[in-house]
Length: 461
Image (tube, rainbow, N blue to C red; front, side):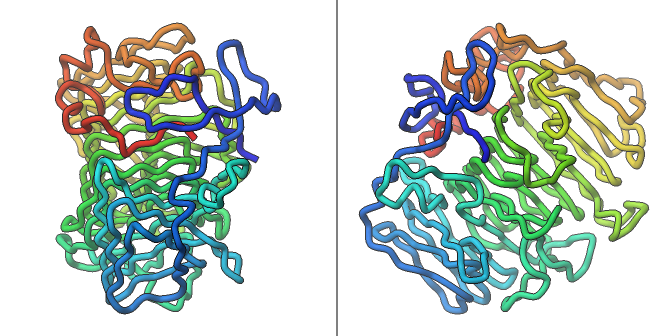
């Protein structure tokens, strides 16, 4: 069973309140670090009446915040709109076929989920609303949220991963409408999600398949998921203000021709995660990108090419970079199977290697793959698998050496590490940080006002 951590007594600048737990004593940890089990206090909505949703929804439906909604297995919205009021809590229930509560918005459906900073919409574990403060939430308690759309992908008529090939609703994604809208998904938390249908075929925290640029995605947290936090299969949707907390695999995964921009995202690793969802050869990364699967095209030349643009992202690994042995964390950035990427003004800390490009990716600068003005700190190796080309090959990237347990490094983030019990997470750079003046990362002076107090985020469980 995965072990989780909870930090010290003080509440961090951006944390909501939570409940301290006893140490399990079952995981060896170095001095100043401690592994404890997750047992967050029940949400106050436990006392609200409940309504169960199941099967396919084909007429417009509204969920309101004076009721807790229980998704019984896979609930799909098709040819209809689901509206979710700010402050609504939704939990999952395993159906008779063993499928966890999961919300799917099919490519002919829409979602209108607009939480607020003080009243986020929460998808979470049933154990946090059972009226028993001693029950423990775990990855997989809630299936996840899947949004499907009609924007271009590079494999036609593909069904979304994590679901059966044949479902009683249209589970295909993609089309020819780059500006298609699947609706609005804003100020939302997805907690303890994930489902393993088969090896390499999982429901993630938030899965987007062929979602178009008319869709609004912002202020979304995925915490303690059983697979990836965010995965984008094709599509053109843009997203901003994303938080990924302690997934069992990658923080951000891009596939099948995704072409969109991610602005202001932050991710934290938990060094006690099991990485079980990917099997015995886990390769959990900060960012992972593939153009397509080998079975779809062994040359990885399908178009449109996977090409995310990342601006102002911060990904925090472990406080020391020798924390992992396979299976475990690998790269801050892994680009393979013909994918392309552009990463700008971002911070990556505490990984074995900063960036790894496989043999299908040629040299970059000024080609289509670019790392421009980023900080890579606390790493063993810098960039591998490519040749830097062009007059300005380094593009002002900073590779600032190996990690230690006693410093917040060159970026000078106040307290970046989830597993440091001496201080709660605080992602704001100190005043002397180069990020403060240079605009690096998710919480520099430029981006901080837009995050406001981030009271919708929960870092401690």
